[in-house]
Image (tube, rainbow over all chains, first blue to last red; front, side, top):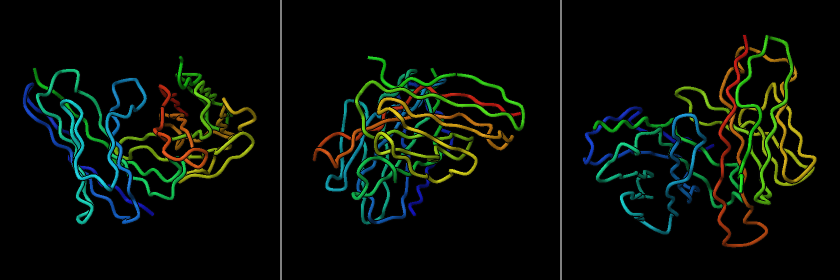
Length: 115
Length: 118
């Protein structure tokens, strides 16, 4: 089955600086890579996703890059703000998945923005 | 629009007791899922359902049972709770692309249930 590794497990950055979280996956059949943000006491919420036919996707201060050859993808947050403090999860899923039953999550990164 | 609602939010059980967690969604999603979240292990799928009346095992199904009698509800049962089942449980739901190509299959999560088994 799929194995998703996520690094680092904790990350502290100064407000205004950039944050990068990296994930690697093992199954070459995976072609959908979402990122979830989990705020304290809440459930995970999708913030951005990318499919294997795209190398990079941006949404305001958030971007995700995908290197399918190396089997890794990264989340980039620029101009970080205090509200970016949360736990971030990467995940991977194969094309054959009709829902999310084969969605495999990374172990999470706790991001802390220092004012 | 409430999205995905879980009840209860907190529960403490004694070893051997049973309980049922309720998940309700109002988005008419075909798929529903139960995950557990443990420190340093991310989210792991316990059971899932692709539609009313059907359920299937996920990655860590032992010690749990589920039922989906109505499309909007997905119940997770613990027949005889063990300390190893102390965790935060999340329910989620999503569309199925099988029924409509190009549909967004984003998983929407509830707020979680913190269960402690002593």
